Length: 513
Image (cartoon, rainbow, N blue to C red; front, side, top):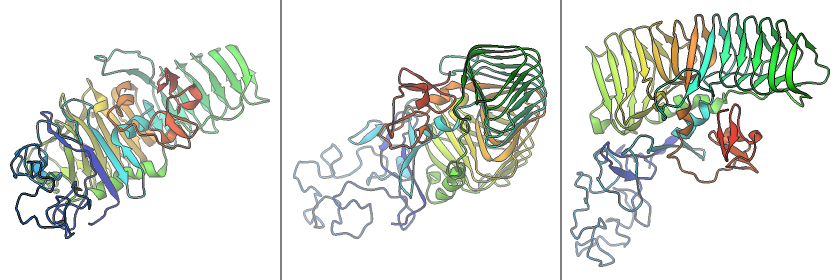
């Protein structure tokens, strides 16, 4: 059995409610992608053990019935024949290879329904070093903020972050819960309005030259200078002096370190001493940011479902004309995307697309999801889309998540439309002339030279709904896929402190403020 660095398990089915075994997909020596069978030796098809017919005895079954228990069902598929193919999918060994993408319409023992509905599938990523990671939970943990910078964020014009929940209906402006975070500093020369929390952990603090409006909490790793009026709806932690030239209101408690001062008119519900500066708000651990590159390498041929749809790994490298690629449920791989002609990729089921190189397009590029589609895209390199770019749909941005593993700047055209979640924690992302972003963006460094409005889709915080809920050992909430770490185990929260910022504890769950 040939091992590879990351093993991916997928609970997936065809778009019409099909099912597949909830076991890790493995690659065998001949590259056929054979999974474990149910034999006592645990080996797959084509092994050389003492159980040649995988019927739990040691003979070659000379009587030909492959039925050691004489129960009248020689192939254990629920009928009385020996065709080993109850679902007539041309895959009698029932291992998750290409023939199983169109699997049975009914679920048997040990099978889990998945793609029959949006969000029902659980794409589980398991590293060779141990531990498992569900793709939905990864999204839920990675995208807690509308905008988040692993280093700094620079805004040359007005920036607004609000939120909505696409599960509840169309977008409506001004919804609470859209946050802005930076592990470094935020620099701005214009108005900042955030309906959720604003956290900047850098020691330089924040200088607000225009109005500053924060619907949730404010947390700064340094001093605050506000030249225009400022309003904070909840608590404020300022790790330094606060200078307000035109008044500053804090709806909750203002916390500062011992010896810090306030200059100017301040209205606060209370004042208290802060025991420590804020924690880093953005999830930018090396392992998490390396995930796109590692996963793409792990799913190069033959470790994917390309064969099920006749997809060549180089199909989108300099295609001769326009390409429309439809992805059903499954795991698919491309060497890269390079085209001057229009390219459209549409997910019709729950799946993942791994891209081993760069995405570089000068023609129109569209990545979309259908009404029942949900897609995670892992790009090992970078994205340079100088032509028209359209990601996702404004009606449901949380169904498309794009992860970029490269360090080159992510380049998108000024006409780009982003209605998805984008993570490029190793790269700079310039949002150009975007008037509106639906979803959220995480980058090493965020740059917005023009007016920027982000509508955070709270539905991403339910992306882990189909994931396994086995107890998980944790050191902090960062290990708990968007939920709480209590007494060393991921589980229900009991207080706000159990949740990662900017989430708050509500009825045992960590949710946006």
